[in-house]
Length: 174
Image (cartoon, one colour):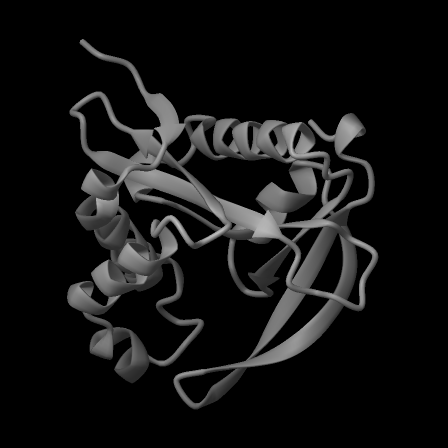
């Protein structure tokens, strides 16, 4: 049986990326953001998003986690930091895993792969934003992220707290 594989995303992965993205939102954010908002999310919208993300003009990078079945079971996406006022060079834009891929070290391996990519690009620091009530907060702390600040975010007409974690030196990141 084939093992879990991490590789750079390709256009053929768009349906799988969209499915993971949608399913992760539905399972992770239930009880954190409004049910009405979650129930309004559509797979087609996520497919359009991933078509734009994987377009050659987009400067971000996406790595997929391929399950032994060959299906996309998770992904990580990142690039240059969008927080211009901070002295942080790179950013994890999104990291999502299907529930069956959680607790297997897959998130850690995806992070290590992206950190390696960032180092190759010459980035020395990175950040990630994560909803305060997201269970992944503990994951980012275990990965060496240090709390930097909080901000409010509107999702589906409701305000949620968003936390920013930073890695000041990617050479010492796990």
